[in-house]
Image (tube, rainbow, N blue to C red; front, top):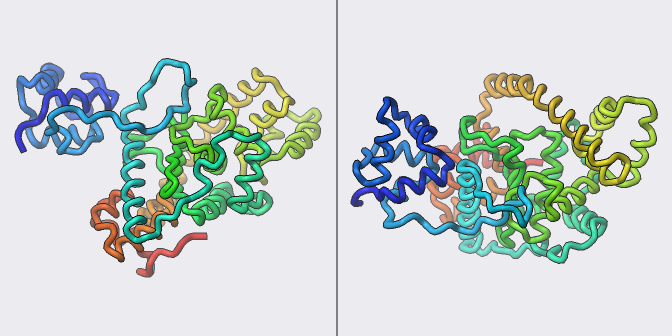
Length: 399
């Protein structure tokens, strides 16, 4: 195999977004000479041991074999960064986010190859269909019609989580894979919603949508719809639902208007009267499976409040959400601990459509268990457990 390439070692650290001090801490290198030792690895003065390279592979989010390449790999196009303005200075993804995006591209390629091999590679006409960016009302009508979205049915669901599952089921039946991912498998790599809320990969055979599962559950459905509009526009990229970016604003407008119409936001505004607006929003959202941030945005875009008021509302709502996160986190831990639901949680994160195609592809030999594990985000030894229910039966597409 030869010796590791010092240039690649340095490149891997830099693209992981780590300076020397952060890197030695992540690698468990201690002592006053730790930074000097790492510099020596990157200058070819010293060679890291195999165990050190394996740790670098884990912390830099790169394959072990990458360190033996003759030169750093060329950057692969991964779509736009919709979190910034088109004319602003180029900004690289953070190391963790870049690794997550790479992972989704790998999953897409594996699924696409499996679909082609099993002759199930149907072109999904929805992807790229809205490239000319029609009016918001036209886009709303097209998305609702294509996925047969019934907003009243969405609102009837018992919880925002159930409402998201309703939308996800409609979307996945159209051949679009919807994943709930906000880290690289551990909470240490968790990505905040300020870094990313969603990602759309606009492939016309194996399109993917990723929703940051660390966001509020009331926001999941909006993010899913937002990313679907990205697919409709044929635009691959990372989103934070910025108002300043023209594409993000368009996707925000379409997704928010699907869930809350002009007539409804007008009726809500005039019904507030002397009621405190945050209290009115909380009361309104409690029975509609939508977030307060969505209501605030619709008030702004409909012209009932100005941008300063909207920003103030959004900040107040975010503070309340952050305050509630600790309680929700503890509650979730207790639920998972009592139910022993690791595989159920993992299945939910990858979604029924992906499980279904992986199970079929493994059975037909189009995917090895190693590749299936990569697609599902688990080890190859866990694939069988992922593809069966608790009763030992094949996983059935969820409703």
